[in-house]
Image (tube, rainbow, N blue to C red; front, top):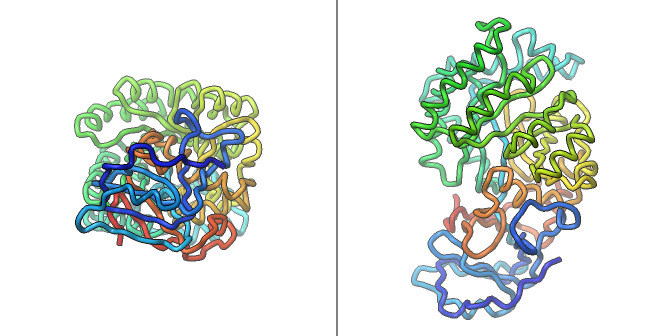
Length: 427
């Protein structure tokens, strides 16, 4: 585990937030900042009797022992001795579908009786059921639901979260969702990364005309860029949904427009999506439970994070992604909740961490890396958050434990004691 040196140049620094006496997980890079792979995949950078200081929403220094006395505390400072508890970076959730209305309890029960997910989708259920409920909801209702869900995630320790559109399907409805997400982002207590899930499922009105649908999703990019509604474009590449050839023109157009791309890849079948994500220089490849060995090699070469979504495997009932395959192949591994009403109604990153360990085979420390710095890289924020390093956002958690492994061991335990986003306490 890494040990931080005495804080260089700390004298003369000012702080309005000081947390000290901690078991501090810095997640600091060993050399240059890049996604963690190999032995570093489980390095959480522990400092015993550690401290972290911040000013105006940014970290100014970390250290251990009484070296915090070099920091000048400004008037009104929050100065806390946390008495040996864990202090760590806030969680980063890089894959969610929070903008929706309605629930899918009946589908959940049906699948538990043996129904196949793709068969439910083909029969007009699944995503299509949520699309209907979401379209019928008023803007005010959708915005209130979205704001509540962002607040719930923050309460459970998430300080950066991705929110996708995707339950409009047709471009006009997708633009409606993106504008509502933008409204929620503007007032959210945490950082919200917005993704245009352009190709989630083919709307029934298009029949089999995938090409025409993709052209219309591309046409919406001008409005999205002009109004700054999203930073990335996503597609569900899966048997019976969209294939690589379908989404290639969408991704080319998105990148030409200055947007990042990401992908639901090889969730239920190996369709070559992981390899395509790597070749497309996608920000991440998500799900990847059935990614081939060739796909893993491609992700490793491109350093594309694989975002594992164990909640989806747990609720749908397919074999979860084997994290040991990814770790052995030196693929950066991240974790996310995949919160959505049909296949992963998971609340909070602590649950994703626990499932990543118990279902996917990560060690507790690998899961923490996957929920912080590697997840930050999966959102293009590897130099901004996910680690307690001078100059980064002061996104911090105080856990009600002196051992961070308890996050995985005591699934569902209320271990997140305090949350700070950009140096401000999140109520």
